[in-house]
Structure formats: C-alpha cells, structure tokens
Image (cartoon, rainbow, N blue to C red; front, side, top):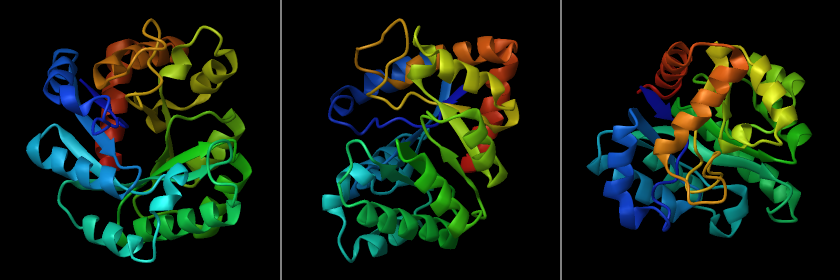
Length: 254
C-alpha cells in the first residue's frame, strides 16, 4: 500500500471525475490520499471530499500564489477548520519567488502566521518552496520545530538543505519530477535522503511522472514515483513502500 501525501483532487481538472480517480487509486493500492487546500475555497472543498470519502484526509491553508484570498479573518477560518476531525495538516503554505506575488514580505508574513497556527493547532505543516530556499529555511528556523513537524512538499532543493529541514523535523517528499529522464541532480538528492524521512506524492493534477509526463496527473500514479525512489535508494520496492506509508501515517496521524 502507498499513501499519496499530496494530491489536489478537489481541483476542477479532477473533481468531475472524482469517483473514477478514487477507484483507479484503489486499484493501484493507494490506500489514502492527503488533499491539501491552496486557498479558502479549495480548503473547504478538501474537507467536503474527506467527509464523503474515508480514504481521503484534508489539509487547509493558503498557497503563496493565492494571497489575493488572504484577509484579516483568514487565520480565524483556518484555525476553525484545523479543529475538524478530517483535517490532518495546515497547508499548503510557503514561499514562491517564481509565480508568487512580488511582495516577498507579504508572502513571508502569511507563511509565518500559518506556521505558527500549525504549532498552536498541533498539526504538521505542508510547505511549498519554489526558488525561495534560503528564506524558507530562515523562517522555519525562526518559528522553530513544530510539535508535529511537517513536510517539504515536491522537494527541489539540495541534499544539504534537506538535511537542515530534517533536523527541524520535516519529512522530504518527492513527486513526478524525480522520474524525469533529465532529473539527474534531483535523483542524486532523493538517493541521499534517509528512508525514514521520505514521502512520495503526485501533486495532482500537476507534474505527472514518466511515462505520463505532460498529461493530467492523479493519485494512482504515485506508484511510479515510489518505484523510482526505490531504484534510487537501492531498496526493494515493497519495503520502501512500507516505510513511506508508515512515515505518512506517523506524520498525518492517519
């Protein structure tokens, strides 16, 4: 069994076919799916889906690319949702210096407030980091280790940076890009992560792994990510799947 630790199955590309998406995941032996929000509307939708489907759990948060959704009472709403029994994490939150707002201070402020909320709520944090490695590490250090830790989702940094995050209690999760034929550096990083800190994900509907690159992604394809990680780790696929499943269960309390 595998757990897709990050899939936006509430996305308009997937929700109309939700029953098919979940059935294909079941056939692929994906036993659970973590569905993170990226704004208030998608966070609410994640909870709704998790309420209706026992194999799905939700996370709530505001992605740096959706800060137009941030308002003074947003944190109150997130704090309220954090008490919901189907919510297992805060996020997706973080920094994005490629597609996010030019106002980096605003990005950082919203990230800090969500991280602090994760600590108060006793939930792990799901962190987005795109070309903002130094500032993400700085903020995570300043806020300090969370009681329940977190995960660096769709990891794209160095092995040295990963070690810093692991020291702060964050798992390292890989998605479809680790399967790409030209992903030599990322493959080297994935090979260097200790299995007990490793997670796999799809980031559906984005970043479909080989041999589906460029197509709409879905949780069933997390199997291809897991198989590539097993190759890189020189680990029997079934054993690494078991380790990563245990990691996800521990992190998210599934």
